[in-house]
Length: 93
Image (tube, rainbow, N blue to C red; front, side, top):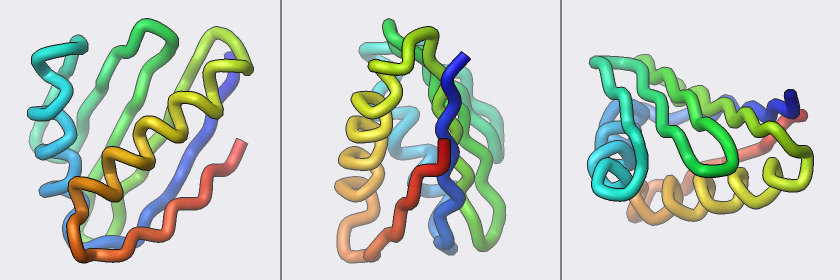
């Protein structure tokens, strides 16, 4: 199963994760705990874990071709949710 992961340095990880979950809850299956979340897309899953200094995002797909697509979708939405905070997101496969 193809997997991609990004460890994003931010003090706003929990806030970003919460906003993203609320944003996608009307469209996708979202499981949200205090510092963890899972968003199930048609083509894969996004897992997130937040602490005081980091937001860890992992994407799993059944097909390699969907990995880049989901990375782009999640990254664009995180950047939008971050507003003025500049996020450095480097995906590792």
